[in-house]
Amino acid sequence: MDWQLFAQRMASMARDLLAEHTLDATLEQISRSAVELVDGCDASGILVLSEGRVRSLAPTDPFVTDSDMLQGELREGPCFDAARPDRPERLFRIPDLTAPPERWTRFVPRARELGVGSMMGFLLYTREEELGALNMYSRKPGMFTEDSETAGWLLASHAAVAFATARTDEQMQEAITTRHLIGEAMGILMGRHHVTEDQAFDLLRTRSQRTNTKLRDVAREICESGGPER
Figure 1 (cartoon, rainbow, N blue to C red):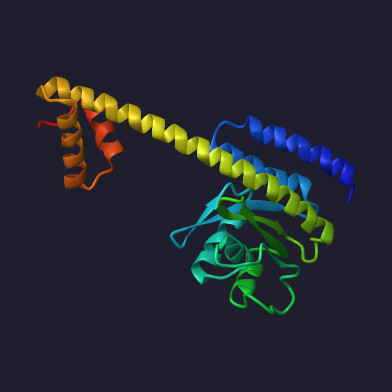
Figure 2: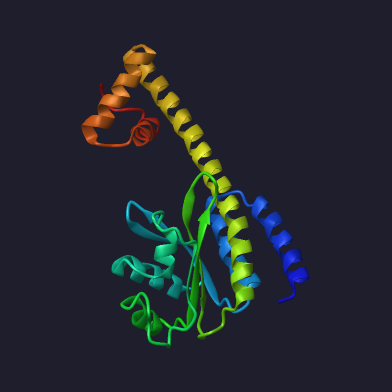
């Protein structure tokens, strides 16, 4: 492993991550970087557990999504375990899927059918939160070395910070957009029905509860249609 070259490429990746403007673009850059930077890595992606359900984000190859969904179905696998917040381990690996499995005995033979030879899953975490797992795959067994694991850890550390920052930025932008929509919808209702600001908000909230629709979506509907009758 040429660590000097690796450091240069990591620095370039960090600058690229800072230049991304959306969460999706950030995650896609992270997955591409894993393939480019980690020896033996043929494909990569990010597995996230949300209320116990698996989401496969930014896969570089369709079989990454297939593997994620399989782990979600079986409730086992190195990437699934890496994404679980109740596990103290932060790196899980299967160095050779052609060998008899000592762990994840249901997952290994089916992953082998997907064309996976070896794989690693790294927990993406910051001091404040655990975000999911950065997963790396090789189509050949025995391709991930100790250097590969070290490189993967360094990449995962940078990726977690970029992931958390991009997600916070997206959430803030969504909050700003929602506030703007609600304000515009309230203005429409105030003008149409000659009500106060508080009364306009009550109309929004009542419609949201009655239709079991998010307040933001009710506001968007009013802005687009001119508003329902009172």
